[in-house]
Structure formats: structure tokens, C-alpha cells
Image 1 (cartoon, rainbow, N blue to C red):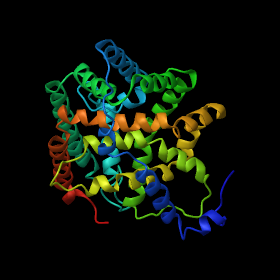
Image 2: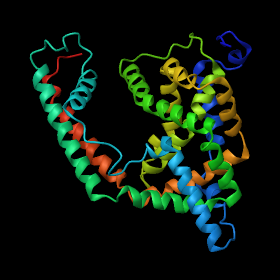
Image 3: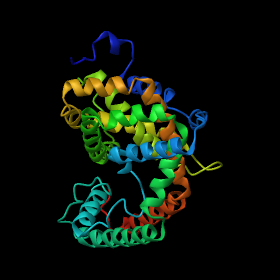
Length: 327
């Protein structure tokens, strides 16, 4: 059922921005802290039990390709080809000037495109070098599996793995992967709106329940991002604090497309997924997953390295400012 802005629910919220705060705050309050995850103590057991738990953890991560696809490591992605670099360049160029004269017919367009293309190509080379110098995928997976198996009992692991190896679980992971794959496009839409000074149309009608479900489906994504992008104690974490809100805003901007992907999962399967993600098994899984993702900090140098990449891109953009038409 579609809920309109005149409904009692939205009347209780002064505007849709407040609705975002309500949904995201509720989501974050229920998000497990690493302290909660660490409270899960390893259950006593013999070596045979530990071997079985480790095997269950391996099966868990094998089944959850939606999570493993998020990993930033030396095998997570390929170096972008020329077509991908050209696409990235055009996306950046579209944000450089609001002038109507800033288009492919501008005399400086090709020069700017070449400068940015070279910068992105150089950054891609550096990223590839960083990946080759980093740990292999097996090292990372072994660390995740060990930590995950230590957070849960054998019984808990069997229930969790049982869900993801079921027909519903397998189909959910496929759908979840597609939703995560579509998210960068949603973020680009949101960023473009922000750069153009546009606001989200608060008069549009969306299904609030579906919106809440979609936000909840980004629990694993946020756990991953908050872990690998954390600059550490004593550093500015304001960007991380804003991440849940920004994620919700991007979902709202591209809600129709993300909802369409979610609705490709049959209704009965959706209900099974929702029931699982409201169950104690999901709470235990999520807490163990958050704790396990902390292992990635031992293998990634994303903080310092990504700062270098961002600085390089900012430098390239700064170098072309004199070639742009005034806004």
C-alpha cells in the first residue's frame, strides 16, 4: 500500500527529513556495537567441535557472496579498462561547472578530459600495485572465518548457515548482491542532486514500509564501511557518523529502482527473509559479523592510502579550474 504525505504517519513527522531521521536513528540504535559483539564468548568445546564450527563459518561466508563481494583486497576488483575510465572522467567532468557552456563543444573540454583521464589511470595503477602488495584473499577469509566461528555456538552456526543454504537464503543473497551492485548508481544520483542544489521531492509517494526494509538491508554494507573506513582514534570520524543518513538519502533518491530489485524476490520469500532478520538468529549473526569484520583492519591500509588517492584526485581537479567557464 502506498502511503501519501497526508497520512497520519507522516503528519506526526513534520517533514520527510524528520522521517529519515526517525528511520535511520531507529536503525542505528539497533545496530550492534563491537562491544556487544565481543560479549559473545567462545563456548567451551573439544577440538572436533571447533573444527565443525570453523567448517560452518566457512560455509557461511561461501554462502554470503553479497558480503564477500564488498571486500577491498587484492582480488576484489579488476583495474578499470579505458571505457570504465572514460565513464568515470565524464562523471567527474559533469560536476565541474554548472555553466551551459561546459559541454563537449567547449574548447577546453578535451584538454580537461585528458588531464583527468591520466590522473584516474595513474590512480588505478597505484591501486593495482597496492593490491598486489597486500595479503591474498585466503588470508583474509581465514581470519574472518576464525573470528566468526569463535563468536557463536555450534547450534547458532547451524541455524544461521541453514538459512543461507536454503532456497530462500540463496535467492535472497542473489537479490541482496544486485541491490548492493545498484547502490553506487543511487549514490551518484544523490551526489548530483546535492551538487546541483536540488532537494528530494518530499511530496512524492513511496511505500514507507518498503523504504524501511531497504534501509535495513544495508546493515551489512554499513558494518563493512564503518569498519574499513574508520580512521582510528584521534582522527576525524564525522564522515562515518553521517554515513547511515547519507546511505538512507541515496536509497530514497533511487527508491523505485532498488524497490524493483527487491520485489524480484517472491513475496513469500520476502516474508521469510524479514522474519529471519527480526529473529534472535539474525541478531547473533550480525553481532558476530561486526566483530569479524574488525579483522579487516589487519589487512587494509585504506585510511592512509585512500587519503592519498583522494588528494591526488583533488589535485587533478584543482589543476583544471582555470580551464573551466565561470558558473
